[in-house]
Image 1 (cartoon, one colour):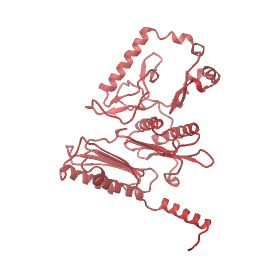
Image 2 (spheres, one colour):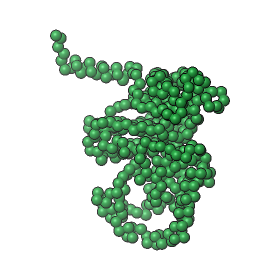
Image 3 (cartoon, helix red, strand yellow):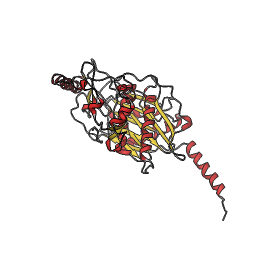
Image 4 (tube, helix red, strand yellow):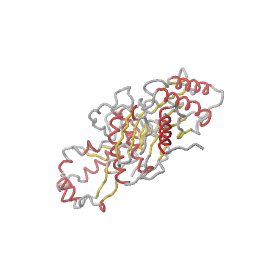
Length: 409
């Protein structure tokens, strides 16, 4: 029998590795969703429109943007369909076309043969359609969470690195110019032998503020699914994010985004008119004059030098500690500002804000994390509802909904 030395085996393995990255591959299926509540009859007008829609999506998969949406049906009727595809931002047009072609075939032949509403995710692309228009609307449901089964060493340090990296990537995606890919990726060294690879992406048809809210909502779900794991991802219809300790995208194809513009001031509800809801940024919050009244020495004293025993928890914004000897850290006069008349005014204002979100807004919003720390007060003690990272948008005529994840505090 022929013999092989170690160097020859390494050459063969390297060649196979190179071929696996450069040659065309079958898209990697991950998850799909079909509505059991809405189906169509075979050989109906709806099926004719669906075939036309999927053909249109597949034929437009060579676009440089890696995104396309289309409508099938001349006038809005019960048989009208709305659909789109979104390819991963680093893919070539050929790879994008391969994934979309696979998706348009498998969604009807294998996964959702009679479903009016469907979403399918692959590693390389996402395709969805519905009998209701969802264009330019941020949606977090249906959702899917996936994780690498291997545990990571130095979990606390790795968790902080993931949070910091995703925090850097979100503004790169949300501040992309109109018509550009809302996509960003980054590699960061974790150990001498391990690198963290991270990626975030939004559907280009949603606004930057909606992209921001969607990605923050995805980040909020990471601890529940992927804490301590070498990789994890969150799949929403309007956005997705992923991190791994191995390259899962073409690094050389990822374009460096232009520097992000200054973060806009977040809109807090109730606003004078309906608008986009943006999750406030922690880095913006700590630059206010009010917060700078507490220097590091004061904070260290109040938390016993960030003692682990005084740690309440943590999240996307960092650790939270219990304050000790709070009458020593805050001006006692400020506590007297909240007499009972002002407290009643605050409570009434919060109730008005919730009523606005549920009944008066053009988009019915369910906050899902209403608590004292998410109520901000202006200089006149007017309450503003903040932090819409896990909020959910309902349809105008929708009165209830189901979720596959636990949210809130």
